[in-house]
Image (cartoon, rainbow, N blue to C red; front, top):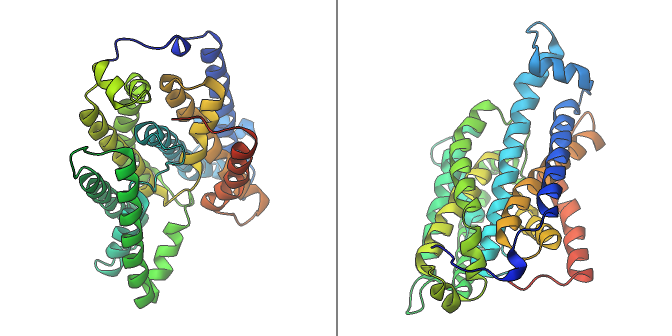
Length: 343
């Protein structure tokens, strides 16, 4: 899977690392905002004291350390996972509209959460995580297995068609169960909207290992994606084992999207929009598209969460709703005024 040659335009240019460092600075600011702002605004000085010199008797310090830091950590992890997964999906399938739903991940996770509630009586977010992750993994394996049938193996078109078909099937089963059981619907709707509310350190610890492993696998896949973007035949001539590369990418996507969806529910437009923004900044080199996506996505997700908490204070608008409100017009403008990159 080693690429032995790269086009001239994929060579490193000095401004890309500088812009990435600047974006990391923006991410730090957004993280501090996520910790400071909410139903009760907390001054930045108090936030820093709570982080570096905590006082167990100070209620503001307790809010920061027990509620907002875990919520921000979960949001950051999920943002990284969705950004990398979206870029990886678009690169592997060569489909500029690929998002976490293309492999049936969201549909599989949703069905298994419903099964967990309806059959096993699971009622806690920490319990949903494992059912959602199992559903996401099994759905992705099923899509890849179906898409691999035939002489050509798992082509981008076959994967997209298999994902669309399985998503429709699983969505129908999920709807049927929810229509027959109103109590399951009442619990499920709080997960399916996509939210960072009440996400604690336990959930962060449960999903972090999967996201870390998936992130490492995704970030090292840049040269392989660059070769595959030239077509399967050219990729093979450059030493890429295309079938194995797609299989590894599928496993990576399951780890990233499965864990992210399990933790917070389906979040729309992050995995779809962020890779296009990264590509608009750095061009087609997936080594940089992946790195930028890993930084831009948590900026978007945490920023949307802060907006949702501020505009409806003391209540909040769930982050899944805010990302749609922000992401849909932005993506339409991106399509309208800037031609999507050919993948």
